[in-house]
Length: 627
Image 1 (tube, one colour):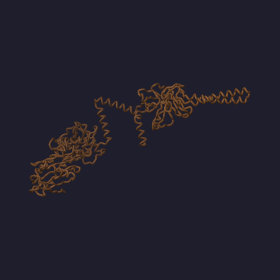
Image 2 (tube, rainbow, N blue to C red):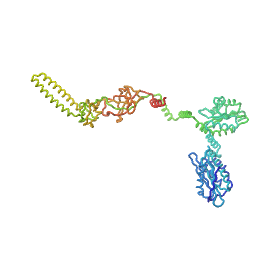
Image 3 (cartoon, rainbow, N blue to C red):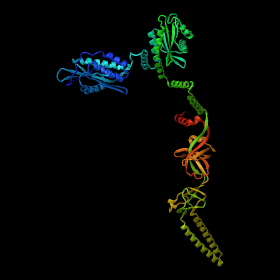
Image 4 (cartoon, rainbow, N blue to C red):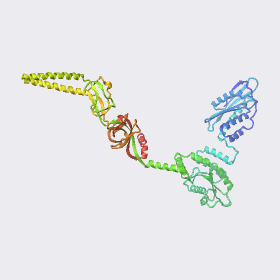
């Protein structure tokens, strides 16, 4: 129900009019036939309604998906800006309610009355998507309700006509048929449904016994619909004979007719076609005909008809039926393509590509296709050397450790990490002042004991001489120990090489406990690569495999190597569980330094190309989904 609201106003009232002018219903239908767009159609409808109601002002607001149609129109001598604010507000309120509404206004002086009327615009599927509002003159208080009902009817008609925009009656019959076919295809869910509609309508219109329609695919005919049947059983003998007759028409590429004498043609002018004769005989001597329907000059569908003798069709009728039905063939092809499943779409795309490839000419495409085919065969059937790319680190092959010979105070450090040293070079020095004092004391004690031994021998006292000799030997032993410790206070390099560990500058003056590591001296002529092999590739490694190494410092320089051994147990490196393989890289020269990191490529032998490209993904899928 529309709501009625009263309000005093000083607005100038339009002249009342007792009835609508002209026929707005017919005008809206005509606009739908001639107008190509929704926005233009709704604007024209607004002008039509405003003119029909002799309204001084009208407005519309409709939303179609992302398109918004918003327009206004006015007639008469009044200023439209006078009505616009109030009517636009009334229209906005109507948009939120989605139902017809009315608002009655009276002048403060006099008997002039006007009404604001609005009605919703609906989507063809049902919900309200907008509204139209107009200002109308009111003669009696009850007059607004009739006007509101009329406005609602016009808006509903416009809502329905939106679905049929552009179906103009003017133009050629082929154009109108094409338009109807397009709209029919848009409402059909599949090519079979559209073909079912076409064949049954032709049967009812022409009075035929049977109308069949089939699409051409790769020089074969696939029957989509047979009038009177809900579905087509392709294994049925009758359907098989009908399809054979259609394919005979396809091969002949012309209309074929097999009539009774005097039914369709006075004489048979299209030759002797045995399959149509068999169909004619199987149809109990009914007249049969097949018409090729063309798209871009080539047969795209076959229309077959069967008729009784009491309903003959002339050649003109058959040709006219063929021309009219041809307009639906593009829509059928479009519906068929839109309804394809994904596998069928893929198969047809491959077939189309192969057909285009095997067509005459197009040598560039053929060459590209040949190269692609050869690459595909090589990918699945070929083999290539499989290389593992793993991180690695340069380590010395031989390392001599130098530790503190005794607990003492470090007084000097003469070598640092990275220095080249020769065997016997002093690396660091320990404090030996206390040892020097002990040596002086022992030397003095030894001299005293020598004199005591001399006196005992002078007194001819063998026992005293033996005791002095023993004490003398003991003092000499202690002196030898002190001399040895003094010799070790200067820590020397055990070999020629490079110091790979050891920086004692911060320990000078500190007490170094006995056995604490001081230096590591590596031989400069032999280096080892430690390769970090992931668990997934550990089974591919073995001794004596060759490879190439490049350091991050000098990636342009590569060195060959050969794996000497693979450690049997895994280790944790950089937070990962890896297996370590050792490889000999020979003499270092000046390019390789201990601790350098790089990348090693190990050749593990030939593998299939497809396996090399996909084994990581396959392993991941197996471990993730337990395939």
